[in-house]
Length: 212
Ligand SMILES: [Zn+2]
Image 1 (cartoon, rainbow, N blue to C red):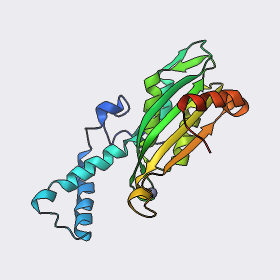
Image 2 (cartoon, protein in one colour):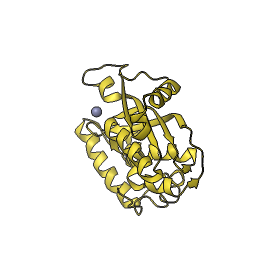
Image 3 (cartoon, rainbow, N blue to C red):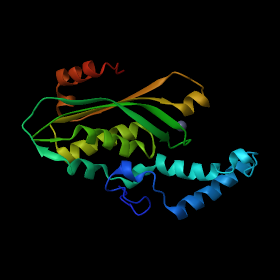
Image 4 (cartoon, rainbow, N blue to C red):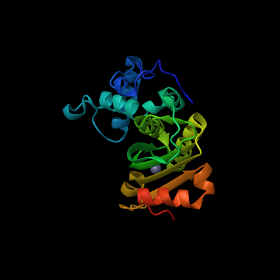
């Protein structure tokens, strides 16, 4: 896991604070590349409307991939509280904006994350931040689902973790098979969500998603 935070300063402190601060050298280099991209697709990179586009793209791609500089395990372990609560903790409808690693085209959707504490809980917002840390990278939905599950399992050591992600892949909608409305659902479970059918059913009922 990359925790290389000298590219985007302040990222380890608070990801939301960091994202408008971009490394100048990197931004310049990326902008140069994007200027070439514009030329290769048949555009005129110096026409008025495109003058600042390469720099905007350079900043945009750094924002969209800032998850590489965030350590999700650290987010959770820095907000781990001792608590005897042993019921399901569920954070529903966490928005996901990610980029597919095959086309670098967005896939967008929702994550539903649940865990059953085993002595430790974390802040609810931290779950959303962990999802974001993995989403803001080049991803495949299947791997991201498992990464989120494993990160929570490894840092909080709960009785079980459940992660379901529903997403629309724009690379499918805009190009290729052009299936505009097909949503991909992935799921990953550990512990009691795997072993106990009723716990898993309760979770699936609460999130209102059909798993095939
Ligand atoms: Zn794709």
